[in-house]
Image 1 (cartoon, rainbow, N blue to C red):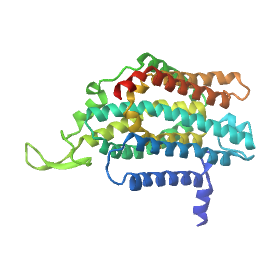
Image 2 (spheres, one colour):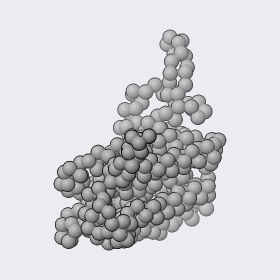
Image 3 (cartoon, rainbow, N blue to C red):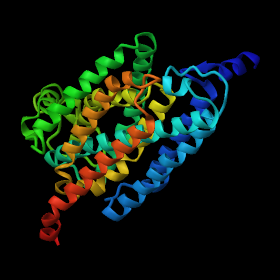
Image 4 (tube, rainbow, N blue to C red):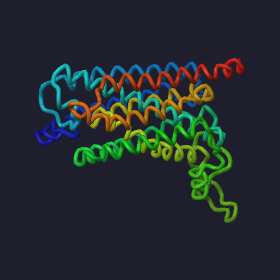
Length: 351
């Protein structure tokens, strides 16, 4: 028992193991509530229900900033390698941590919107009914939680041992932002998507759905023997996981460019992604209204990458967290408002 207590109370990536376990338990509880209560039966999620669920997850994510405040409101040494947190103590450290968390949450939530648009296109291309889309997104989120944990753990290890890694992240983010700006609101032809074409060549997929099943056993047309086939739902699920891996290559460096504190990085990531499924059904119904948001995302990535270099001109080696939060929220809000204003004719046409 003493050995178990020592493990639970030991430190892992800047926080006690029990604090990490408590967070994961909260995530599991939210997922169980989602699948076992809210979406126990397959049904088509409407825009109103989507917005309500999304608001619930956003409130949960924002409320977690109170937990961040409590954890970082102390004068004891911290294993965090973020100079912004090492340079201050007590309430000042707590407020800085909250600002970093909220900035990360806002950036990851906005980057996830781009993910929504791609997933929406593949659901349309594969003709996945709305009542089964939540099932794909739910199981997809399980993989995302594990995948982000691995990537963030590796990122934290790299940054802690090789601080210059942040400059590589910064250059990558600036490059990604420039490429996203150049691509703009151009839509991808999913029939020519390389990931889907590669998956179709390697997975035997049935041409039609079989309810909410990912795999089915059917007779082989050549031998008559039963064999396992994937359904379009499985194809969509694998695509969602691969797409998240691709987007994580952008989002993980982006959050590390905001803060190198592993706990803030992981919690802001997961809370931003948890509400993605809920928000998906509202956004998918009005994708055209946000076609200019990518320009705001591009500028956000360029800014986040640039502030790594700008931080060298500030006393603690970091761009001020309150400036970062204000500029990030300003860019995202401007992109949303401009998109809604520029595409206001789409709403009138659909009424």
